[in-house]
Image 1 (cartoon, protein in one colour):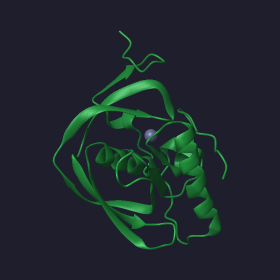
Image 2: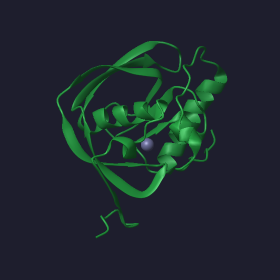
Image 3: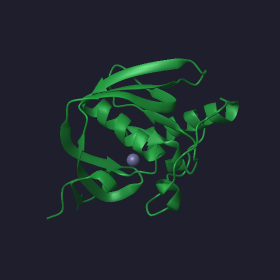
Length: 160
Ligand SMILES: [Zn+2]
């Protein structure tokens, strides 16, 4: 395991479309392991491969619910339901937060680290994390879709 460096805005890699993983090699599995370690170290709830500079379609999420760590390769949203509106941040964008409208519940399909097809349905924060991380794979940041973006203090309060 190894910590990777989290790429920061305005790095161009964050705005590119990541490529499908055609074959799950030990390198891809190591990438997932490193991404989870990097996410925990940064105290985030999700991380996408482009955020560590790798343009592959892979994400990790752990929102602290019963799912624990979710690792997904080539994830795709297969259905969306309802709506939620609330604050969102990103490990690649320091000092900002934004209010983003997202689906309330999503079902996501992808491959696990062994190439087995898996499906997750999540609501609230988990749904938000799926949508945020999958956006990263398409070069989309929350600041591109937020209705309002604002500065926050190091303590996480909105700056007035
Ligand atoms: Zn992000």
